Structure formats: structure tokens, C-alpha cells
Image (cartoon, rainbow, N blue to C red; front, side, top):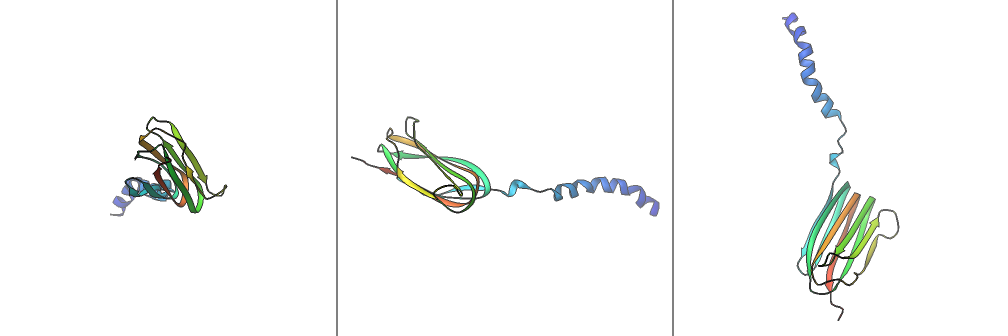
Length: 143
């Protein structure tokens, strides 16, 4: 019986070794970043949250006007950046703003540049984002 167990030890060792290796490795997949849309309709509102991860999400917003009122902020952010990029119905950039943790202000707002009426594309990019924030975009009639 002892002879059988000792002969099988190398095989048992080789079969269990991968379990120890894979379980002991540091896993960076725990990092995440997420855009959570809280209102869709004539306005687009949302929250951003992350734990050191990155993501890029795009949304469409029908804008019957030529500009949008926007704001974005980050709170309790420990790192990373939050970019808000908006293109008009013709694909022209009307807004491109970035907030970086620990660099400058933690909120921005204003009016976009004039653009073409129709379906506008809003892209939110979070890079190595660790914290939370929010944004809102509302079509604005300047007439």
C-alpha cells in the first residue's frame, strides 16, 4: 500500500500544482468602471462609478435644437479621468471635456458649441477611474 501511494505522489502533485498556481495569482480583473443611465428622454442623465477600471460607452440623444446644456462632476475620486464627448447629427464635435482626479476643478458645466439638429452622439470614457460622479445633457433652445 505504501509503495502504491509513493508511486502516485508525482502524478498527484502534477495534477494539483495548477490549482495552487492559478489560485495564488493576483487578479486585476476586480477593477471595474460603469456608466449608469438614470434618465433618458429629452434629456440624458447618468452616474459614473469605478474601482480603477476603464470603459467607453456611447448613447444617442435626439436634439431638436442646435446646442445642449451640459454638466459633469466627480466626487470622492481617488484616481483616473472622466471624459464627456458629444458629436452633433453631422458627426462634428460640439463638446469634449475631461475631468481628472486631483487636477483642477471637480465639476464643469456650460453650453456646447452650435451643431446640426438631429441625433447627437454622447460618448462617456472612464480611464483608470476610481470613484464616482454624474452628468446631465439637455437640449437647449437659444432662440
